[in-house]
Image 1: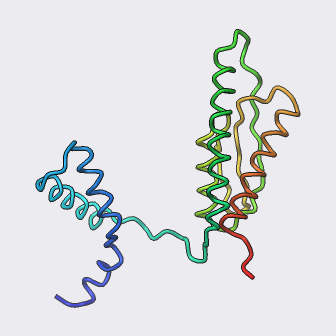
Image 2 (image 1 turned 135 degrees about the vertical axis):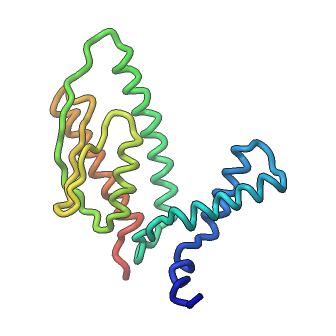
Image 3 (image 1 turned 60 degrees about the vertical axis):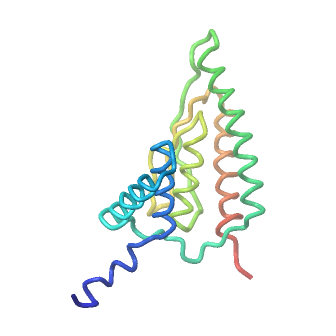
Length: 175
């Protein structure tokens, strides 16, 4: 066998991903035995080599970990609050409020960070990103509660805060 035939193997093998799949396999089986570890390792190797994931576009991304952890605390608080709000909207004895679809610009430069921001927004109850225009850096969102202009502005401000946080955490200027 020639060296060029196996050149791609070096880029396909991801040791930490293999370990993670093996651990998940053992958790799925319910116990750690030699057979489960070996079986998990074999499953992991098949997945890693037969179904390779593309490389993540994270070149040049540096994380401000302190800001990241502060943001995640705020995000979990917002998740709790949004869950209560949507629960109240669903269970109150009144008709549901009007909904809205908005198109908003996003200043995030890195596509990976943009997808992370969209994921964080979609995990919050009450709003969903329905379209991403990467070329023009625009997102289209559907919001559940658009009963008045103030409510719509609050949602626009929430997206703006999310965008600013992602820029501070991941895309800040390097001195």
